[in-house]
Length: 396
Image (cartoon, rainbow, N blue to C red):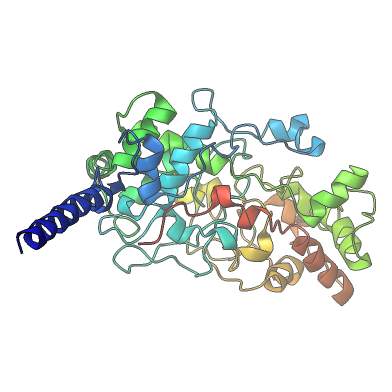
């Protein structure tokens, strides 16, 4: 009997030791990082992995190899990257996290990406975007592809932001869009352990400032260069937009010829191989202006009805179109430039012909379809599915 008691005590002791050993492995410590039986050190990557799907080696944002036709002087002259904020891999990675983080809104419900959706060419399929409390923005959300290529560096439809660094902070402070003060923004960001790591990697220390937030967000947006469409495949073969592309259909080549012709002058306002604007333009949407655009910011009569000209890259995906989202389809847009341009004192002179009359294109049905088909060749499926531009946050 005594031996049996000793055996039972021994079994009980073994069970206690076993339970204690198991607790060492299952007990959640160090902010939910599990002791894996090594030396117990928790790495920065361990901390980041609790919240984020980030590669151990950063994605390449700073040194994207662009095709040779993207490297001509004309396009490089459009680059609005300031000398004090070049793209870095660590900076753009931080910007990517900030871009998708809903904590940058007052009630943690919307992020920059809520209104700039990757699969929609970083635009919004809604006519007006929905803010953090359900309110609607005043204008349609513009796509972000090739935002770095716009020489004057101004942003928003009415160009009220002097630079991308200024622009990225404005929606965060907007009473409809995200609803934070800058002090609230820095406090919320500084409270997150993953940001302490990402700011240190990007800027050398964990100090969170509005300037650093704007710099990182701007780096991420400027890294969004779209250059792998069907159009690019054609350019890679012939390197001349005036030559028929062997990978194009007859309709696509017809549309390309029209796009670059003096008849339509489409390429005058959507310039370079990035298909970007050179300045804000009044494109004849209304004879009587209800939105002054740039003129509402500058107060200059000559700027009335002018709006920023965005890149046409991924235009198939960024509907609806124009600053107010009035056109649902590319066909609607072509119809506007064909027969619908409205005359006003401030209409861009590129939409006029001799004698001051409004330009009418008088397109045939085949020409209209050709222009639409050409615009579809600007869709870059790699860009809108690329992981390095996608949401890095793990699902809860």
